[in-house]
Length: 228
Image (cartoon, rainbow, N blue to C red; front, side, top):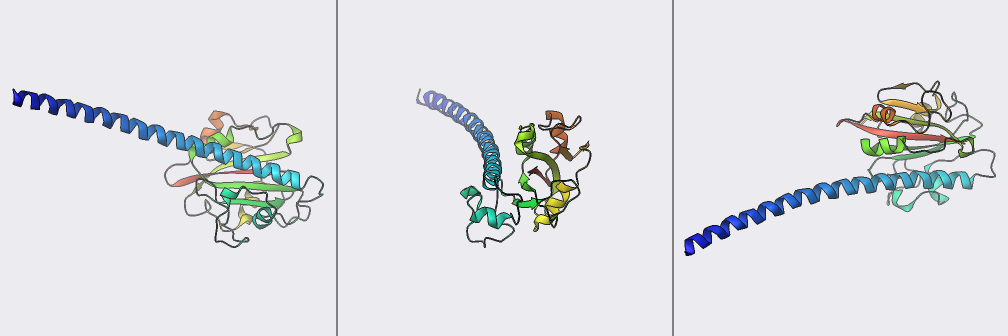
């Protein structure tokens, strides 16, 4: 009888352990999904916060002048959680988003042919690098301002190779890439959405975002916004 009872107890224990294992796996998966959702929502809030602060700060100005990471930090336009402690204010990598990718801010020209050295600097660009595909799609399909009052000129969604342009050391390349948009045509791994465009407009459709946010294991997603 003792042997039989011991056998039943062992089977019951194994059953309990199996149930705990299943629940643990489900709990980990659920936690991972919840964290991914949290990070995506966080980065959406951060982008909105930065854009709103810059437009408010420069509302009475004719140009965005020398706007860059250092100036934005100094003027309190950047959420504290984006600022990496211990780096100089003018360090290119001082701003990092919640996914660990760099954040760049800089003045630009209004038209599509200008570069960072353009004199007018009547527009600005905010770029978030190192994004996951889910975060990229969420950002690409969000309405950042389809109306003219929003100030949005263009949104550039693209995939970049890890270790190269996905983690740049200069803002120049970022501005140049977005400034040189033309027709708003879409190809795999890249999309430039322009408010009011007939083909690719803000927000992107899910299918357009799926193609633009093509970020396999060896690449990262990035999104840039150009506002005036």
